[in-house]
Length: 208
Ligand SMILES: [Zn+2]
Picture 1 (tube, rainbow, N blue to C red):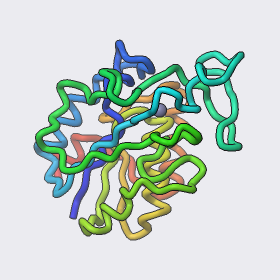
Picture 2: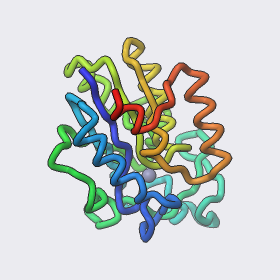
Picture 3: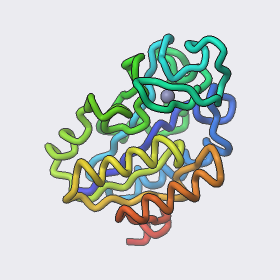
Picture 4: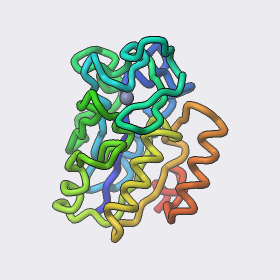
């Protein structure tokens, strides 16, 4: 079974959002083509879904401002602007994303004490979201991953897919993804490639 995992294609990560990724909304038409024409058996969308007091927010750390480095759950943590707060428009999926074709929504980042870049587990690896079990139950053996942002949630999700689903072929869809920092994107792609993750474009997928 072939699955597509769309990472955090939410208003908060698109232009006008609280943690906008440059050109983030450019992934929406590409994602929609993949959803409709990519031949996937299962389509999953992850959703960053934070309580308003989430510990990744600079606002929760006196003296810190957005994009400073701080600490959360004993690990270095980027202090983010408040973003994707549960029930706000910032947390909604981009309005043009074709939600009718999405089989499963995987929320993440609900525990205020730890961040969850990956759609599979929290950053401290203590708590699983259930996505790996879902994909196993669906007998997924090919998983394409894309979305926002390449250098954070997409990369960590792809690396966790490699670790937690060793029998699944994992690919990163580059043109259906955008990152926060250009040098971080390059490093992320190198790291994914070095871990055995395929790097493909949507055209290559649609031509198959
Ligand atoms: Zn977040």
